[in-house]
Each structure stands twice: as C-alpha cells, then as structure tokens.
Image 1 (cartoon, rainbow, N blue to C red):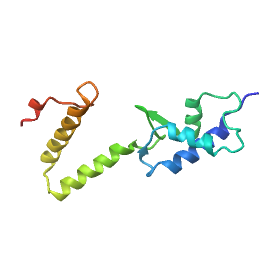
Image 2: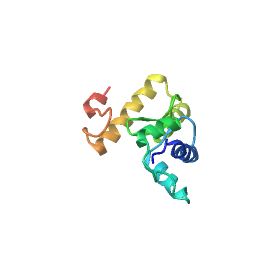
Image 3: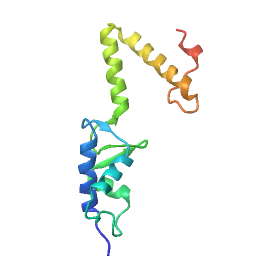
Image 4: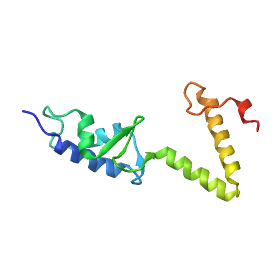
Amino acid sequence: MTGDGADEAAALWYVFEAIRQRPDDGIELPPVLLNALVDDIDRRLFATAGPPVGEVLKLAGIEERDGWYGEAGVDWKPQMQRVNDDRMRALARRYELDPCCAAAFGRVVTAWNGYFTGPGDADGWQPAASLVD
C-alpha cells in the first residue's frame, strides 16, 4: 500500500506556516519535520510508502534553496538574513549613512563575520586589506 503524500504535505505546510514569522522567511527543515511527526498523535504520517520527502515538500508548496526552505513562488530569504538586512537598514537610517557608506559598512560586517568563521566558510569573505578604502 502506498500513499500519495497529500496528508503529509498538508501536515508539513501547517507546521511550516506556524514556524515561520513572515511569508518572505525561509526556515530550516528539521523543526518542520519533527513538529509534524510529534503533532501526529494517530501516527499515520509517513507510516506507508509514498513519495520522497522532497516531492511531498513540492506538493505542500515549499521549495528548497541552499539548505533553507520557503514558500514556492515567493521572494523569500533565510529568516536570519532578513533580520540582519532589517538591522543594517535601521543602522543606516539611524546614522543617516549615504548609500555608499551603508554598502561599505555591509562589506566590513561581512569581513568581520569572516574573521570568525574563516575564509573557507564565509560567503563574501574579504581579506582586511581590501577594506582599507
């Protein structure tokens, strides 16, 4: 007996909606899967053979990008990236930074983060010498 994945897709969407804070947020998948399984008191989800989880996610309207999951067809980004972008915009407004200064500040923050994670792990990592200007 095999299932079509519809019940699993509905459960994943329900949990996905409950976890994300905004429609343009991308989130990690493990909490979605774990919460869907814990909430399934009848133990019927994923109990029979069905489509792979990736296909169930597509059926639910959830897409994957770089290890993050968001609503298909929506311009979303990982939740912490959105939070960081909002903080950067708030700092730029607070200190009345010109667009060029806000961009330079963003490069410095990226380099600072890269200092802690190392050049092999940080996207956009720049050596300190390139930040002198």
